[in-house]
Amino acid sequence: MTAYSDILLDTPHNGVQLIRLNRPEARNALRNTLLGELADALQNAARDEQIRAVVITGSDQVFAAGADIKEMAALDAVGLWKDPRPTYWKAIRTFPKPLIASVNGYCLGGGMELAMHADIIIAGEDAQFGQPEINLGIIPGAGGTQRLIRTVGKALAMRLVLSGEFIPARQALTAGLVAEVTQPELTLKRAIALAESIASKSPVAVRLAKEAILAGFETSLSQGLELERKAFLFLAATEDRQEGINAFLEKRPPQFKGQ
Ligand code: HXC
Image (tube, rainbow, N blue to C red):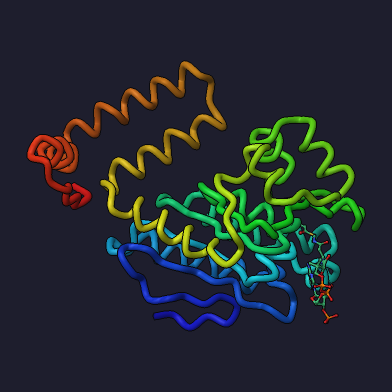
């Protein structure tokens, strides 16, 4: 397995790869090395048929404190323009398998944007979400303004981005940013259990379901419905669909093979 410095990879278990952000000394700030490693790990996970879902987590105190402010300070506009970060974000954005973020503690700036790249966020009661870039004289730069308005609506998106204030996990849940709130000590366990449950489904159906839902961010309702219909028809040709239906009728658990 590739040796990384800023992330830790657990051995995949029950179809789930766990990725831990691991820069405790900098509150998991997303320096280029970390983001590049994360992009690389996800690209490997996308190719590995044994891996059917990925969970990404930080520490008990912090998911990620945002972009690495010290690294960012050294870059002028041209430096930022040449920066490889957008390619790393693209690799995260286009990861085709389910990505679950397990969030405890601070989830800020680019860290919150990373969590929003995940398909599902599970948060501990102690999690705090914020886009404090405004305090640095900048704005979110990895989709924060766009994903927030599509996820929580204008009122809260404006409040978070313009004021830099944080919101607690329960409010993030009510706002639709977070799928579930747990006791902090159970967050990762729950995220992994959910990932394992998803990993037991048909990988073809899961992939198309993710694609269809994400398309809803970008397309009109009629285009989205068309895409959903085509994906639905495509799945009718899979062995997994036959297996799922047979297993139901034979009153046994299905064995999906991704075919
Ligand atoms: C670089 C960071 C950092 C960051 C913390 N550190 N956040 N280094 N970039 N984003 C470093 C500190 O400098 C310090 O290093 C060490 O981590 C511990 O930080 P403390 O502040 O002492 O820790 P604590 O009191 O626990 O507070 C945690 C915190 C706070 C609330 C998360 O660190 C904080 O507010 N961080 C900045 C959050 C932020 O503004 N994020 C937005 C970044 S801009 P030393 O060497 O002093 O020990 C952004 C733009 C995104 O994300 C653009 C697209 C990606």
